Image 1 (tube, rainbow, N blue to C red):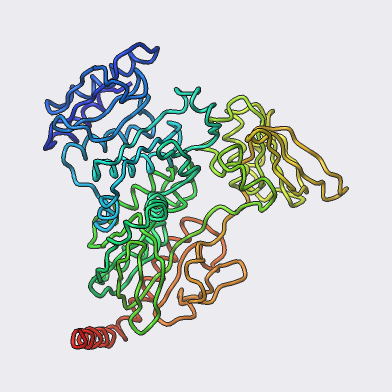
Image 2: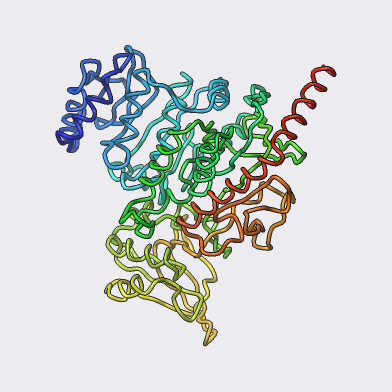
Length: 536
């Protein structure tokens, strides 16, 4: 499973471990146990600071293919049930490094909030090893466990624990349970996990930060291609820059195959997100990841307020918050998310192996999803509202060439049906004949476009009825000093390469504005700060 190249890389990564780390495997018998034993033994062999032992943990671990991580002989609270290969291999490596003393790269305010939780929290994260969203959740909760001895986090490979999957009716990943109760289901970010903890334990907000950052020249809200581009261009101009994001990469992280980013023949969303983060690391950019903006106060000096309570005074703002999947808005959709309704075929497709599914949407995303699912499922039915598909011809031709893909055009989805907590059908109407039909199926994948992430702005800037921020050719919004770029704006053609260009353009426009107004705004801030000190 682990070839020489991987083991050599691990040897390099673990060379500077500060604490000894031990894999503790639950004793017992299981068909996959020999494979797991070899997997852990090979990893332990790369460093004299990594050990592997087998012991009876007296019920602390789930099964004979469950293991815990100890640091200096103390339980870290991190568990893995299954063999963390695929996308979860990175989760294991990071857990080892961080348990061994590497820095936990979470915002200090998030660390304080997590550390403030006083009661025991036992997280169970059900994953698919092919899910590229799952590691974000696993890694965040592992970090929480390292920060607070009251917290335990367990990654569970759903493919190896089908009995638990069936008992809990889990049909989507990641699915997170907290103390035996459903906590989060479907695509979820670390920022959302933090917010859910705040909602559940409001007392921890008493330790919310009241800190005020130094005055920024540019504050970028959003960590996708547009936001990262804006931050890098701003930093290259020598400006003081902060970027705030739920996650670096944004929506692009959910795209697996990217073949239209000019000069890059082929890449994936996770790879591109990693490249974006690595590029930002080359510059002096303050990154506030896993945090959300709760308010923007508009004055000559703007103030961005974070979910952690921290306040960022800034001369200019660039909004690049992108978009999210659009929902159907039909009966049965919201009620069955995670129980047959899904938005990510890459993450949740494996749960429908050998089953019948539908994809709603005939654009590029919908046809790509159908093609992906056709290799896993028994059948895929594509439902498109318009008389013709909107996807590129090359994708449409591929779809028509698949024997298990059926394409229905000019139809309107009316309802998602379910029985005993699981999707079992989809109602649609033929728009030409007005006749209603029902498809018997096990899953529905919604791929009908995007909705801009602009609700947090309220009435701050002018938006279209669809929620897009209205901008001009210089990315200027209706408010002086506030710019916007990428999929959250009225710019047509929501493409990665366009978002990158728009982010650069917004940054250059902000820079020109600061050349004229920067010194004045600095003086305004200094006077405001001086007045506040006098009052205090």
